[in-house]
Length: 220
Image 1 (cartoon, rainbow, N blue to C red):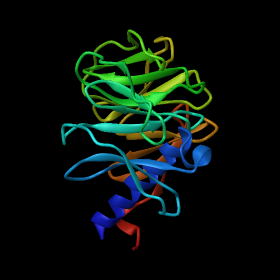
Image 2 (image 1 turned 90 degrees about the horizontal axis):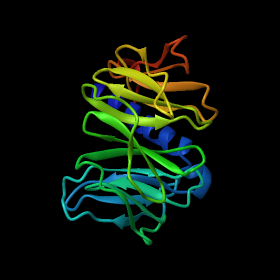
Image 3 (image 1 turned 45 degrees about the horizontal axis):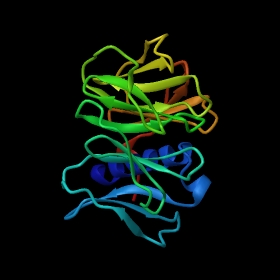
Image 4 (image 1 turned 90 degrees about the vertical axis):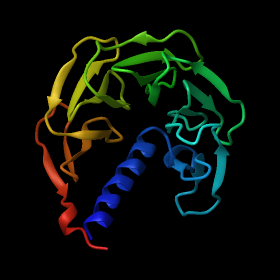
């Protein structure tokens, strides 16, 4: 029961993230990592039809981390750098190699830039390609950034806490303790996140945190 409930939370957040980034609400497709032998990026309709594998990396342990552009016309992913392709996997182009450990891309609201994790910091690069700019100083165990859909702010993980930073690298601050895997609401006013395996929400300034799903009581 507990294992099923935890899976429910992870899938719900994945779908919310896809929607905020321009997934099924923009082009009618959900992108995800299909496991295994080989691992691949696949897309599927929200109804579960039309499953397609659109990209297979040469290494089976590639992180991939697919993320839709806001207009749903491009897909960013990580594989020895940050890459972009069309929704069908064509038109593949390298955006940046980063510094060798580039993962977890997230698009700016206007689709012109991509933020990603590289080592112990966040970097920003033009979606058209170029030299990335470091956004934050090195921190411990930096994870999965999410660019607010109304711009201005990026939320990301540091160890087991959530931080925010302005898109120019200023106003970096600790938002909330004991929280991971943040996802923006479509209007950018709230965040969903995981705390101790449960699903929580809060206002974008970190106030009003409340648990909305307790994994121990989820049925199914």
